[in-house]
Amino acid sequence: MIVTVLSAAACSAQPGHTGGPPASAEPLDWKTLETPVLTHHVQLTSRDQFLKAGEAYFSPEGKWIVFQAVPTPAEGKTPDPHYSMYVAKLTRDSGGHITGMETPIMISTPGSWNSCGWFHPQQPYKVLFGSTMEPPSTEQHGEFRVGQRTYTWLFPKETDIVIRSVPAIFMDLNPDAAPVLWGDDAKAPVRVIDRPDYDAESSYTKDGRFILYAHVREDRQVGQKADADIWVRDTQTGKDYPLVTADGYDGGPFFSPDEKWICYRSDRKGDDLLQLFVAELRYENGIPVGIAKEYQVTDNGAVNWAPYWDPTGTYLVYGTSEVGHMNYEVFAVEASPAKLRAGATPADLKRVRITHANGADVLPVFSPDGRHMMWTAQRGPLGRGDQRPTSQLWIAEFNAAGVNLGH
Image 1: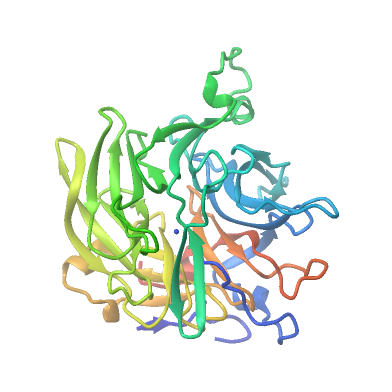
Image 2: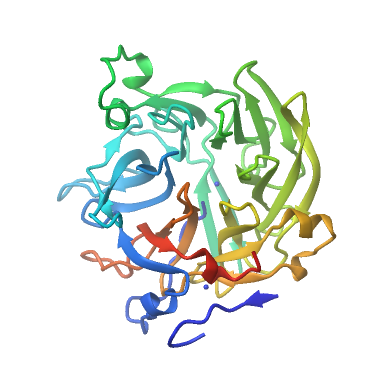
């Protein structure tokens, strides 16, 4: 079932080309339509600085963000072909409202392909992300088709999971600390998971011991679609454990707030329609060694991806083409462990539309305290020569009560 949010006036690996209608289309009044859930909208990045930016995550204390972006080149210069990784400190006014961000700091190697940043939970000045470290050797595309539209993205085989120390973050969070003798990872990223083929889409448990990540099977042939599985790395022992190994690309995993579950999206049917899943983890001696049971959360004719847990661990926010493949929107869907264990099917789970804008709204995440939602959106002003707004980072204050999923 789908639950519609009412406003005062009326009743909301990453694919590319999720643009909305042309700029000439009748614009939706998103500020009014989104008011039940989202207020105090702020555009964090802009076309003046970045041709495109996206997939941002908060540091553990909520003061910094990490994101990927392509900088706007100087006049006459060729833009970078791949995303670089950046961190930036959020700015706030005297009332505590987020107003923007300070000058971003690039932390990836020039020319490299980068994706999926994440802060170390205990040492937030250390940033985890997927990187080729050097320009990828070939254009290793993955793709899927939805109707007449083809979505493509890269799965470079050279992608490893790396970590980078950022002294500026350390000094901001520890202004009275004694001088630090920084290691090599403060000068350039250092590999922490370097298995053959693509390793990315990583995040930590709250104690920093386990890294959840996606790993593309190492036996793929030239031209064969990449098939990623979900693994976990024990950083104490260096041992890797497979969690989700079903055929079909499984990726974008995150631990639930209590770390007893994971969420992810999958092309399980091989029909190019990504669906959302959650799975209850199986622990042995405190180590997540597999899954006890998997539950499907969506089952429709849409592309559903980038799920992210709310702070209560009872629902997911995600981007979906449910309202049309020309315009992705952010939805929320129930993922209550009790309801799933009781046998709820995707048809039994309530959904709520969160965003209402003409351009694509995707990759939603929550701040650690749940007060803000940050996402990638195509709703800002047009850049020179652009037919539609480019993908940029947005943030808004989040009213959990407005989601109305019964929790």
